[in-house]
Image (cartoon, rainbow, N blue to C red; front, top):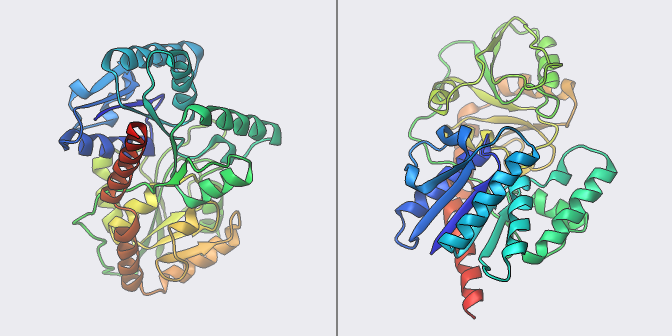
Length: 362
């Protein structure tokens, strides 16, 4: 089986998913060729993947010239390497590469897997923009064999907005099972952890408001991440520590030293951070928005607060401090192993590959 992966950018969770899929496929005897097309500036986001499995295109931003370079490199690979399956990651690669496939249809017809990693129409935006995104997705379904939704929420919303097809399947993202676990509290300090961009979507403002109204000096917060928009400024409060962005290899220390993770996001496609947290036996506080209730079982593996409500977030943070963390962490890790491991994600993806190739033979 020959597989060609393509991504317009792999920053964030896409890199985590792509790396795990590629490592498994490269090691498997079922695959005779595994190649990934990614931006030249992001090759370090796939550590451990041999360069013979990676082809690079120059990306200078989200612009026409970068899209054209991806289009040319993808078309060349489809013609020369003759992949059985092309696996497209995220919206822009999905559009660019499927346009190429329409043009190449008379000469090459590989099976097409598309994972938007959260449809564009799920983001906040005008109704006109959402309608355009829906029309684009519906059009490209014609030449797509399977669309991988990363949450049940994503699939349900697609159906509500008119992207109705048996081609849509749910495969949850996954992360490896960890040997390291959360350290138990040894003093009165309670350490919350936040990992992500400091912006409106991630609920940074809600987290700051909640912390500002917590008058308990024993409650601390570590924030890993940076603002990507100049209008968002860091707010320095007593008890808050900023680390900036860290390498993946540096995150373990913070996960095992924290008592709970906070995810105040207003919306998420399917966040990787809560999966990482559960793999380290960390309880979670998250908003009750979009796909997050699929990850956090309220009162069992953590707490859900009302989306956009900083007062409710503050209440849940105070409630978490007095909760049975050992029970929650064990329940969360068990839930993680049942649904969100990289092994399950890889296995479910391979099953989809097999199904569509068998349908081609029939």
